[in-house]
Length: 582
Image (cartoon, rainbow, N blue to C red; front, side, top):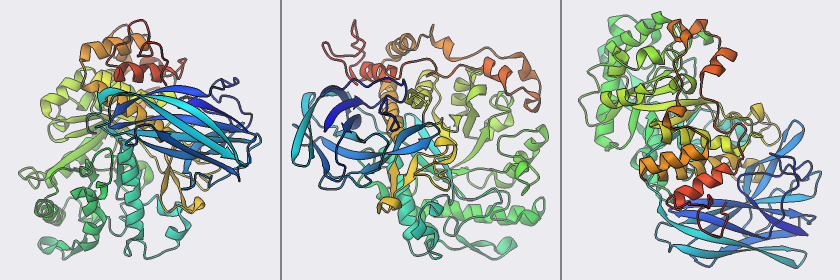
C-alpha cells in the first residue's frame, strides 16, 4: 500500500484520485506540521492507495497522552462527475473500517481530528499514525504544535444551524417506523445527539418546533386544557423530558467544548398556537395566548432555565397557503400590521421576568427600513438579516447595540459540497470583521431520499448524516461541519485579541483595503420595495463578493496560523519560523 498525509483544506476526488479543488496530483508527503489551539481541535487527512480495505487498520497517538485523536473513514458522495468525500464514519475500536466503500480508484481516505485540552502544555508534540494492511505496517508523522492560544467558551459568535421538526426521523428507518418514538424516548435521545454534535462543533442545533402549516409534533409543546380564560398547560411531562436536559445543561455534561445549557431555543408559539387562528382578532385569542405564555414564563422560572434565550417567532409565509400573511421575511408593507397586532397580544406578558424570552424577526427584505428608528427595533430583540442587504448597513451594528438587540446574518443555504472549503470560513470571518453577533445557516438536516449517495442539492441542506446505515444509531458529522468548526475556533479566538492587529492581518490576507471593504455603498434601488428588485445581476453587483471566490483554500490555514501564533507572522505567513502549518 501507499500512504500519505493531506491538509484538511482540500479533498481527494474518489473518481480519479486527484485533488478535488484543483484537479491536480496531490503532493504525497509522509510528514506534516499542524498547529492547534488549547481547548480546541485541529485536523488532517490520511490517504491510502492500493490497500485491501478489509485488512486495513489505522491508529494514531500523540506523545502527550492527554491529547485525543479520533479517526474517521471518509464516505464519498456522488456529485455529478466527481466523488466528493463528506460523510465521516468513525473507525472501529480496532482501527478497521466500517464502510469499506468501493471506489473507481482503490483509495481509502481517513480524517483525523486532534483535540487538545485547555491545560495541555504548549510546544511541539509528535503524533504517529500507524497504518497496517496484511501485516505490513507503515508509519506517518505529524508535528503538532500546541499554541499558547486558549479558546474562549462558545458564544462570542453564534453559528446557528437552523432546522425543522421533525426532519430527523425520516432518515432513520427504525425511527420513522416507530409510532411511539416521541413518547418512548427514542426520538428524544436521537435528537439530543444532534444537539451534542453541534455543540462539539461550536454550533447551535436550532429546531423550529412547528411546520409551515402550524402543526406541532408530539412533545415539542406541552399539553393544553380548557378554553378562553380557563386555557392552561395541563401536562409538562413530555415537554420537560424532551427539552429539560438541553435547558439545564445535563445533555452536554460530556462536552469538551462547553457544558452550558443550549443558548437559544424556539418556543412553539405562532399565529395558530396556543390559540386557534380561527380566533385571530377576537378577545378570546388574546386571552388564551397570554394565559399559556404566562404559564411558560412561570415554568421557566420554576425550573431555573435562566441561561437560555427563548424565542417567540412567526415563521409564516403567505406562499405556503396556510396563513394569509408573510410574517417571516416580510415582503409586503401591510404585513407589518400582523407583527404589530401579534406583539400587542403578547406585550407585557413576558418582559418583567427573570426568564429570557425574546421576540425574533428574520428580516431579509425590509432590513434597511426596520433596523433603526422603527418600532420593530424596539420590541424585536433577535434579528436575522439577509447577508446581502446587511452589506449596505454598517450603521446597523451600533444601532442594535443601542437597542440591546442581537444581530445574526442570514447565510441562507450551504454551498454545493464541491465548493472550496474556504467557503465555510466566510460567515465566521464576516461576523468577526463586521461586528455581527452570529450567522444562521438555513437548513442542515435536509437529507433527501438517499443522503449517502446523492443528498439534496449536493449537500446544500445537509451537515449531519444519518448513521443507521453503518449500524450507528446517531448522526455522523460531515467534513464541512468539521471545517466550519475549525473556522469558528479561529474566528472566536480572534475576537479576544487586539482588534486593530487582527483586522489589519485579515484585511491584508484577503486583499481588502481596510474595514470599509467589508461593506458596500447603498444601491439606488433600495428606495423601491424589495418585491420590485432585480435579485439577479443587479443585486449581485451591489453586494460584497464572496470571500472565497478566486482564492486558495490554504488562505484558511494562513488565517488560523496567524491567530494561533498571536499574529507573530513577520516574513513567514505560516506563523512559526521554519514550518508551514496546516
